[in-house]
Amino acid sequence: MEHIQEFLNEQLIQIVLSNSRKKEEVSKVKVRPLLFRGNLVFQAEEFKGKQAFHRNMGREETEKYLEDALRDTFRQMEVTSALGTMQVLVSKSGKQTIKAKINREQGRQPQKLTTLEHNRKKRYILEEGKPVLFLQDLGVMTGEGKIVRSKYDKFRQINRFLEFVEDILPKLPKDRKVRIIDFGCGKSYLTFAMYYYLKEIKGYEIQITGLDLKEEVILHCNSLAEKYGFDRLKFLCGDIASYEGAKETDMVVTLHACDTATDYALARAVRWNASVILSVPCCQHELNKQMENPLMEPAFQYGLIRERMAALYTDAIRAQILENHGYRTQILEFIDMEHTPKNILIRAVKEGKRAENGKELKDMMEFLHVDSTLAREIGIQ
Image (tube, rainbow, N blue to C red):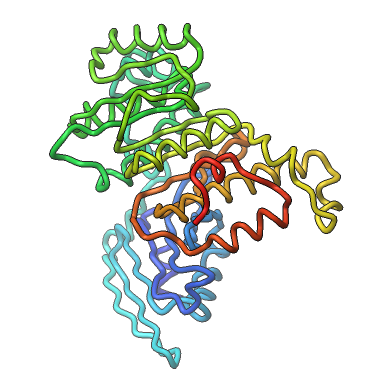
């Protein structure tokens, strides 16, 4: 703990806890420093199954957290810092082997918090200070590349989405054109960001098609694509449920497609055998109208609670159905809940091996007395 205390400052890069004794509870933890409302905190990212959970802690709380983690859960810890490195290995009997290399001279020159904030900014995929035309048109960025203060949340949301795209790049082909369809594209600021990132930054050969019901929105988006010179990006007016414009695709994106429109988009993606699905659901009403169970009535009688439970059940069922069809599926936090309650992203990657979850899934749906559009569209094995 004396060594750990030396590393818990603004010069820390990352702490990784691994080799868990309780993999069913938490498989790995990453701890990094960040500025939160002007103060230095340490954020622990806990990986539990297919989900990641975050918690921010002060220095003393982080010390206790790491001490408990090494004693009760993890057998390995790796620390990386501007001050040096440390590795801790814990045997089955609890004996610790510690290898630490600390640069004392560097430690006499502590890094300023403002420098840490600067380093965090540099990690954005679309960097502040580099003008991007479509961000200027959105009012997010000035002509000099500065982020408009009132639009900073939008800037973070765009970069957060691009981080999800970055994670799935190994699943996209590099030797041919990547075909992407964005269902319910709306004003398409994330579609433009995805095109800019894949084509202009990463150099992929791509073809992105955006689909939406609003004709005026489609006309506007096409005019913007032409203005930016995005010649491999086109927008069409149409309904997700009846769209027949493609026989196969590599990635399907559906951002805030309302209610069962998300289900139709996911069903299309599965039928096309899409390698990647990124979906941010919106307005999940279907299960809310159906849910019925005497045991759950004490909770269901409160409209707000019922609505939120229905939304969570809806996305959990969608994720499990995708697992059932051979997709490794994660439910991830898109952006902080304080900015919007619609903060869940479903990320599904085609792995080929179907999850044997059909009976349990059907039992849960029967318990809730619900049916799902996605289940009706592609079935449950």
